[in-house]
Image (cartoon, rainbow, N blue to C red; front, side):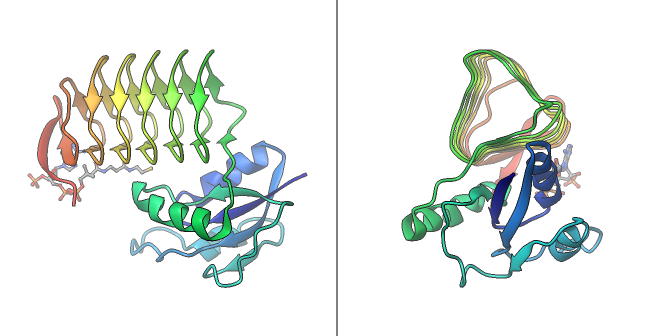
Length: 219
Ligand SMILES: CC(C)(COP(=O)(O)OP(=O)(O)OC[C@H]1O[C@@H](n2cnc3c(N)ncnc32)[C@H](O)[C@@H]1OP(=O)(O)O)[C@@H](O)C(=O)NCCC(=O)NCCS
């Protein structure tokens, strides 16, 4: 059985559990180390852990963290700002993070994936795609041939990114967004849910609608 330790925890935690279980693994330790979501309509991290039918060691902070060769490490935060925690973990503890791919994802030929990336079920990735480090590719995403997804970016459920596109680092492509082929989305941009992106989007912008138009900067 593969033993997993999750560093950082947010709303994506239950999905991470699911992908770990689908890879014949179990969660052994979780270091929460992030503020609880202020959204009162969700469930807490503790409740998510309690839904597992086995014991997991849960720590609120990293105070007691000691790296172990026995564990595979997973980054539990989904937002692009997680890069700060990753830098800290690498500098202080010199740990490497695992890549986690659900067995029901289809990964095409010549696809490369960086450290710490997580790919959820139902996703289809066409040939020659490069996915950077610590990217989240959520459920039922489609990524076309020769596309590049930058480090720390997050692609939401059922987003559809056409071929030969480039999504830069630290972007959020929200659920159900459509990105047409040969489009470039600059770093730290956010594409809103259901947007249809027909033209390049500058870095640091929030773009929504059909066709997508920048409405503000990403604060
Ligand atoms: C784009 C987004 C990040 C903007 O969030 P925000 O900064 O809080 O923006 P606001 O809610 O203040 O919206 C600003 C304006 O854009 C509009 N807007 C927001 N999201 C929109 C969207 N996806 N499509 C069209 N219009 C949108 C709002 O109606 C509002 O318009 P108004 O000023 O006329 O009232 C957010 O709306 C969104 O799409 N989030 C994605 C959620 C998601 O994919 N969740 C899945 C998690 S797995």
